[in-house]
Image (cartoon, rainbow, N blue to C red; front, side):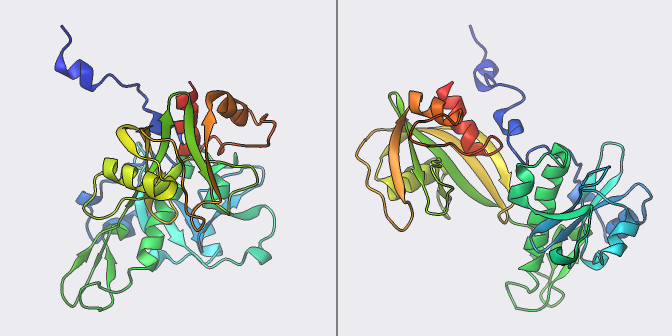
Length: 314
């Protein structure tokens, strides 16, 4: 007779979440055990390395030794604002990794330097998977700091504390913590077909899974049902969790699921989707291989949408 724990943990390891972009972040954060001296000590640590951010982009060295982490001298060279730095965590051997904002003009950058936006970085081979994950963390939290300069309770200026993992209001003692917005992303399936749509901003021929933010007072499952119906008119019954993906646009967590469609007639709003339709497994296999005769394509491999689609195809 199977044990209860066997049925609970009848899942693959590493889990599918480990195979998507931005997921390979192995830093030890330990934010609860920080104090007001933690960041200063980390900056002065000889083993510390820094990620340098500028207006939603990150600095990359494209030279003979390409990479995204730099020493303190390089941070100062590019005008890094150490007063606004965030301690992301430490490596397994205790070396700090720190995110630093700077104001860099992309037009004046010479070789071997280049600024990458996060989406371009996701599909680039210039940076290690570990660094891509840490960059997603750093980009999200620096954005959070940029939009939380004032207390949400009394309006007074707030101040960063514990290495950038909290902001405090000196006027009313309100403590503000980094936020993550949950987003459901779902592949609805029925018999031998799956539901995908395309937004007006998608590349030509590209279709993807539907997605939407989880609203207050709503379960993940209900968010899947609501968003699918709102976007396509398709009703959903069962929902099966598949994987998640950190998504620094600006600070979301994509919660990927497969869901069971119990209706077939599609009705979609023109203001959200340009098209929405059912695709057979044969269609999707050709789309993944970029060989569909109609030019239809799936999202690229590091997106959780791709993983959802590929898992369904089998």
